[in-house]
Length: 465
Image 1 (cartoon, rainbow, N blue to C red):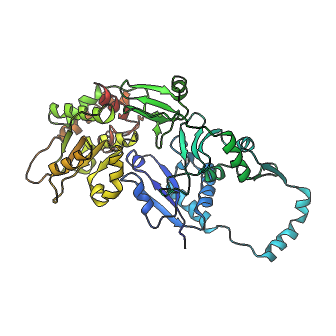
Image 2: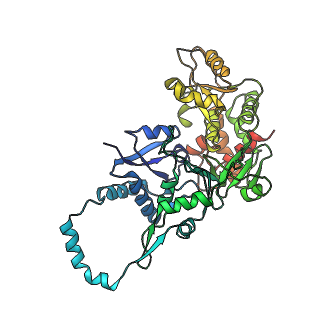
Image 3: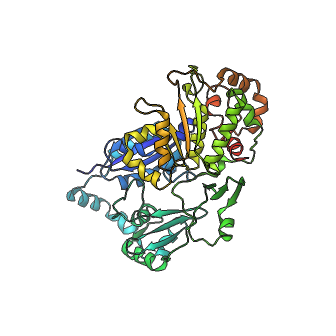
């Protein structure tokens, strides 16, 4: 029996930033396998089996649009609100999933409703072409690159393109890849207006799309190492120049058909109030040696803006047992890791690599991994791990630990950091979007992570030479 699940989760970004944003999703994978494809630290809040997860997800999203804030700036499946209420609604929808109705019951209902049917005659609108379809759907554009496989790209107004795939490909994953058929069915206009029903002829619509939207060998823009796609509005962020380009302006200056990105983040992380002056002050209160701060800045620059020509290693040692800051974790690594996640910079943690080498090696081979985060293990020395990844083409390494055996190395002064934050509240307040935060706990841990705090200032400091 094929399994169908609906799930609700909160991704790590929203947990750490204390934002009540949750993702509704569907999967046919067993148990919690789908969760492993989300960022480490994401939490699965709810999962429930159902009969048809594709239709069920569509119904739930339609209901959620009426009850919660639809965070389309993040993605069509993201909603802001009370997660407990969301779980209750999902449960009710699935438990009341429509069951087959007996013929006798249908006839009985038909007799009861005969009078209403005579008064209210339903009007059917047939949707047979792509132009017809667009009258009842969001404004978007399609480019078809392979008619046989129905592959290509979809772009919503003022957004980037995203890929449409062929379900027959060996590497097709229905949880992460979208087909043209599913896209059209998912985005069709719901229900009736003034007793009008829409009847979609998908074979005819897709045939029309193949004829009208085919582009042979489209020019696909490949972002440079230091360029990042941001959404809402669609923006190109040039980290080298620290400039933001509206996609429409950028498109006019480049002969490119497709602006494609698999992942993107919201451009409202940057509020125009960034400063590089406050960041080194904070870091000097946290990190013991200025030399370490300079090495960290150079390492961040190499990862985000321009790769190092030689092997670059940053040692992030933390041996203080103080649990008041980030549960004793390595803050500099955590802040850079969060930045890489927001910019969709692919990094690899050795804990995951050793558990499934065959899965991660293709990403390394295709030069998709910019940075490896190494945790010491008994089976291999740190140097052996660096040598192994260097042979595969990796140049940037972070070596972290909570207490390296046989050493008392420590780069942090947490008490000094906490005192600095407390004593300089007034100076830092103007740089914050959220004026309600107190300077305890979350601010200490997330000051360079949360977008309403100093994330954008941290990025500007990292990329400024």
